[in-house]
Length: 130
Image 1: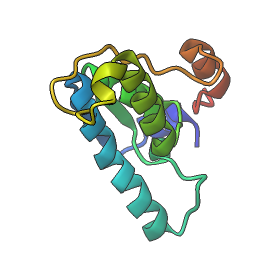
Image 2: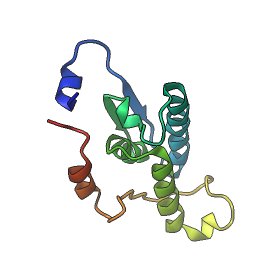
Image 3: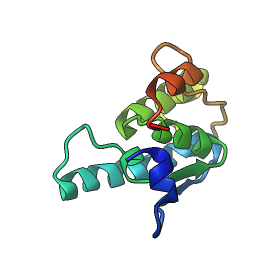
C-alpha cells in the first residue's frame, strides 16, 4: 500500500508524538525502543519491522523532532539511540566522562545518516510509493 493510499484510507490513524528536552531526549528514545521490541515480538516480526511500518504520522518537538524524523525515515530505534547518544555525548565529553550524562547537560544533537546527509537519506529511503 502506498503512503497516499494509507493516508486516504478510512478509519483511525496511528500517531506517534515525541517530546523534546535537549539531552533529556534520550528518555524519549527509550519508550519507542520498548514499543518496537514489544511489537516485533507480538507481530512475530524480526529486525525488518520498524515503527515507521505502524505509524501514519510521527511528530516531535526539539530532540523529539529529530527522533521523529529518524523514525519516519525507517531507522530502527537502536540506530537512532546510538546516533543520539554518540552525537550528544561527544559534544560534551567533559560531562559525559564524569558519568552524569543525563544531569545538567545541554547540547545540540544533530542526527545524520551514515554518510552525514539526512536529506539525501530521506530521498533515497522514502517509504512513500507516491
